[in-house]
Image (cartoon, rainbow, N blue to C red; front, side):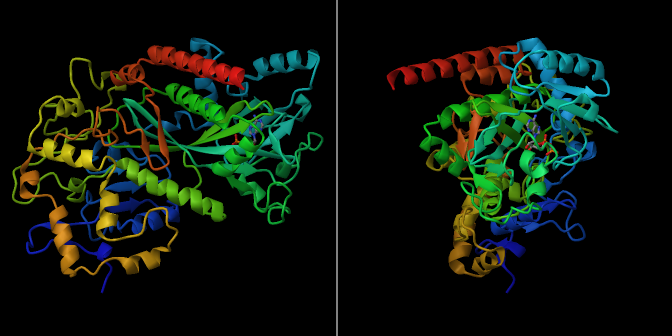
Length: 550
Ligand code: ADP
């Protein structure tokens, strides 16, 4: 018998009431673990030959989507990229944006990224800075040169003397952090996962668990050519001679989890919470630099923030990755990334109506699900729901025009919304996939059971018990008849605030009501910066009080 996830599951006793699994679509080169995780969750894979073009719920690709894909997005679909998210993921763009923000909002806040010059354009400025540093007494300066369009440590050069600087393409030359935090003599950096579920209003989650990536040879400023001592990329270190050997204080391989790192810090009396807050502030301030992005519905972006910590426990932003590696090089990768992906799906908060994947439901009048944050009554025949326009975010919603989400909350309550809210109160974070898993008696997301074994555990389709359960869970005709006005998928069912925590994802923005308001009506960056300043001074005074009591 084929596994249940591979076929449409008929609800008990009524052939017209069907429950379909959610469907994912992968572009070529999408990481294999995404397929594995979604199959584990009972999803099925989109089949271009068999299925209608719009018959999917999640499309994952490693490169930006063509704008036509954004334009034709349907209410039940999500794309894993925002248009123009690359504005912070290319090293030169990031450097330029952060420099602009530093100029506009002061270096006190924006001093978390090492001074950088984009070459060849900034050559003269670089030489001026280089000469100034050389003349000043104290420690000699080191620089790192990185091609802007390469990743995984390729083409990187570390130098002290400008005569060693050679480049054949656009590069950034950045101050090399020559006093990194070392554990047992090994350099490390942190890969922090960040999920933006909306740029308007700005909604940012950071993932509590992450990867600590070690260099596999001891840090040594007298051998700048040794990539195994200076670069922490796994793609490099896995080929190092010491990768597999046991390294004192580190172990085998080149990775730790954040949890292990935090325990390590605590043993040495380091305030890991403070470090975490500082890292979150870096994330918010960095993302503010590219806000607003062009309006786009139903997208999310998973970024990989690379953060280096120096020996004073100051975190530095090295770069932001567009497609953070999701390959599984070791068991730590498996633990962290598999759970991360499960939690992303939870964050996307699919509802049962999404399984229908159609605007018109059987036996009902036209049912249209409003795309998050679109103005009501704006759809024209040419402008399908979810259609993007070239308008900037600032025109996305105006103060006078209540987004559908808020209308929903402010009293256009009807049978369906009442029903949804009632359910939501009982199960504040029950998403469709978690329900589906429960109903199908599938193992929890974090359980490291092989996909094959999971598929075997799926219930037989003809099981009367399962059929009965599923029929109860299927949307009633009443629900199908209702013209849905859906809130943004990332909003919690209470208070219209984004959900504070979903699995390992913690909401870091908006962090208060004022930040929420300032990010709603076209992102008021100035007000948000004001709030961040308040937040930082609050964090500092809490820290001082704590230090005094110790
Ligand atoms: P890539 O995209 O090629 O991985 P990164 O900017 O992440 O480029 O740099 C690769 C590695 O080089 C980092 O993981 C880190 O170990 C090291 N590195 C990069 N920039 C700096 C810096 N400014 N100071 C110290 N180390 C750095």
